[in-house]
Image (cartoon, rainbow, N blue to C red; front, top):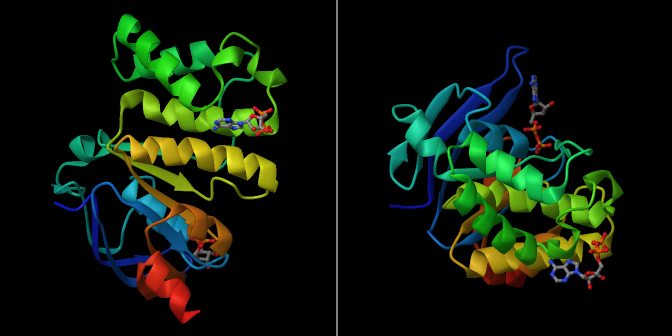
Length: 226
Ligand code: ADP
Ligand code: ADP
């Protein structure tokens, strides 16, 4: 089954804005997939529906073959979500943030500690494991968000504009961590409005504009057309 399958997805908000007007896409397992589009295109709405934060108006979503409407909890267990805003406690240490997060999802403490070491190393944060998070640099804080989402070992990692508003050095550090996560087998989907970001990370992409997919395919084929 595809890592993500979306069929004729529609979303009309209460104010009658049609954010999605019939979106279909498939993401293959192992892919690094970008959803590229300008502000207001519908990217956050799509991510919100896939991660169960937003209700869909029509259509269907399945995650590794698990239908979201019928088996929401099972589908959610396959997903890790990296929200745009930093939402961890700045007065906790990275190691505690990761272990407590895993604990919330039922991961035993010993296992959580092992995973935290792997994830902090992959995010180039191991040396900072016991620093107050408030003192971390902007890039470190962003990579901590990624490390935390990986603590439940999701098969699909979803990031909504993970690098919006950060400078190129910080972006490069995040890209490195994301590439390692993908190379280790986790499927990644990210939304972005930077073509450069999609280009340096992704194998496949879809371009969304005003609620519709306007292009979809391998990054290389699309670049040749631009
Ligand atoms: P993007 O993430 O690509 O910037 P969004 O999914 O945030 O796009 O927005 C798509 C459209 O839906 C925009 O016109 C936006 O104003 C509208 N929209 C987004 N969220 C809401 C909401 N909660 N209520 C009403 N309209 C919304
Ligand atoms: P940032 O500069 O992103 O706020 P750091 O202070 O950790 O965060 O970055 C210092 C250096 O660490 C960077 O110049 C880069 O060479 C290296 N670095 C950043 N992210 C990674 C990563 N994911 N893997 C390996 N090295 C990294």
